[in-house]
Length: 247
Image (cartoon, one colour):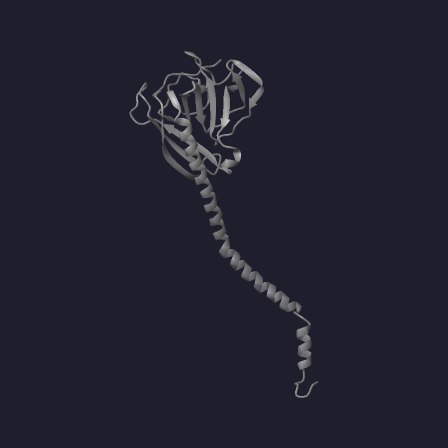
């Protein structure tokens, strides 16, 4: 012991040099866990809100892209425009007249092809060139919630068909407007409608469309939706009589 140093000072120095005791470590860990729990409790709702806002922003981007593509597709409608309430074959090829609004839009484009637009999906489809099936080509089934275009050839005075005599879906071509990843796990629905007061045979200058993006395939959890006007560039009339038939 040095001169003037109190007894026990040396032992206290040795204890400090020895490091943290087990009891002190346990107490520190306990206090740290309480602090971390408080921080997580504060940040967790904020993190969830951030994720939700980000997904909402993604849904808005999807909505904007779909509207832009939809305007570009429908402006080429000419000849006639027809609406169906569903894309079921019995509806498309039935004797029921066209609807005032529906989930499927059909029109004749400037190249003379029948174009069918919907977000209701499509079963596996055989591809035909005229009346001949192309055995080496087949379109896989498409699930609902994606923007899909089907094309059909129509000769002068001829009616076309959506399925062959075996009940299989057919088309001249089938196009997915966006790749699967573009939907980011969301689902799309588009409802088309005519301007009010149009009679069969009247000129259609524009169509209305409600575009909605949902979080779930059942379309019960809405993210965003918008009502848009689709202007038609060429002359087209409202058609209500049957256009398609079975082979």
